[in-house]
Length: 331
Image 1 (tube, helix red, strand yellow):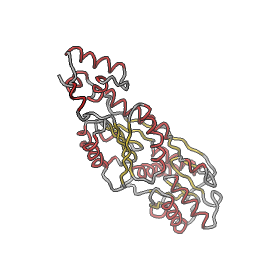
Image 2 (tube, rainbow, N blue to C red):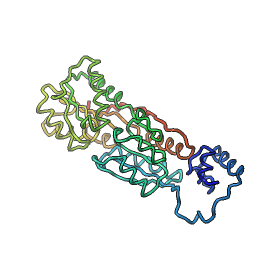
Image 3 (cartoon, rainbow, N blue to C red):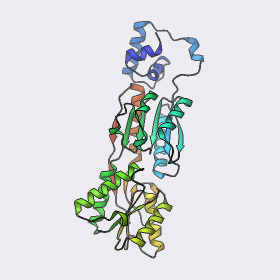
Image 4 (tube, helix red, strand yellow):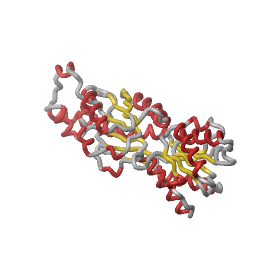
């Protein structure tokens, strides 16, 4: 009888069985009871020599973050790491740039470090294929929806970006704005930008407001510099512009600076709305109107779901966290 046999017969992961055999407290009483019943039934005796060998089922968790400049991701890390550490896990953060294949990155990390679980923060769902399941460990995509991918070991926790963007467009419409510029990344490579753009177009169509994509949508990366340059372009090429919706708060902060550098006032001349709800927006002048993603709830739910999959061999779960429209002074 091996530890893998016990895992197969009890219905729990090898890592969970290992924790029970080593009297680790990070196992539910139900799992402990069922696993020990299998152990007792077969009279299993751990190999004492094996305990001195290299650990085969490590306790570490890998957190793979897309890029290094995203303030929302930094906030999520600040909330997520304490959640994991409080439950006895050791998270290790890995950063990859925008061109890195997240699946390849995960395969490399798994081969070298053998974590018992993987978090992907900000990865594009199109990077994932059924090959992820071959890793044999629970994975979770945070801030993007993976429900439609059908990958059995991939959970997700996210906000409904499409609905949230529509709410912001409706807010701008309610304030009297009809010519709205939108700043976002490339929809074909950025899932959040695609979902938020779709939400904007949904709302504009529903409200009967025309939208000239070539004139009113401007590409930018998720940074203050990107928002500044995009706002300057909109000011020069979008006659009648009265509002800008930026798909991140950092973009919105850059846009506000550009508007003010052109001698215009926010919101009296041009209103500006953001997305994410990062702390910086509460200290800008004017304070930023934005869609707030609750990073505390996102982090807590992500930790609970992935650790439940690890410790209880639970199936993948896909969860949507509510967003909040925060009315500042910029609209």
